Image (cartoon, rainbow, N blue to C red):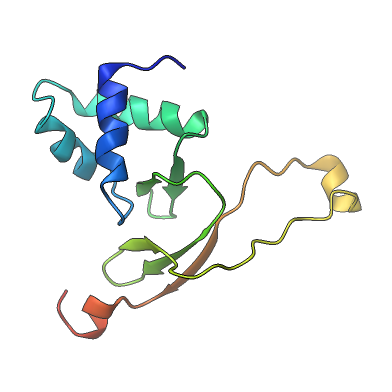
Length: 128
């Protein structure tokens, strides 16, 4: 994947966020630096960066996609009320599947997401 100015700035803006923003949210930040960039360009570049393993795409059942600048396996906490997503502030070992298990002979695992969910501090305090 070749580096473009747009791709570099999208990645720089994503790395400023610890809350795993969606493409729309990131688009508004990137437009402050590149006013003529389109939402479609932001989406396409985020998808490409995630396909290449530079970032992680987090997809939830609601169709909402969020993007994580850290591509390494790690765990998240998702608030079920406001939808915020944050990295857990402590390490949890993500289990590796037994590659010799018969079930895996007819399947291919492409990745995993370990997620805890509940209420964030702000929602518990009634601020959202």
